[in-house]
Length: 89
Image: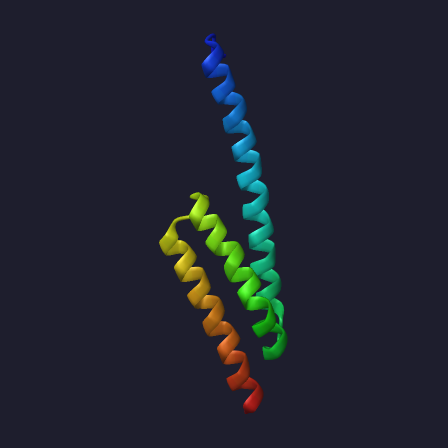
């Protein structure tokens, strides 16, 4: 365990940040999973901007890499768009 006062504070702050990052990361992963399970394009289209905003916030805070965020959003948008194509068939 650290002996310096500032180092002890840094450990406390890192623990809080880690817990917060894990919570928001897990919440976003659950939202992504729920969006992928939606089979109706209108519902998925309404939910997509909300999930994309969550992903952007994670990237902005450094929880996930910005390219990973872009890849996730791209895949989700593609999935939502294909829902409309499959419904038209």
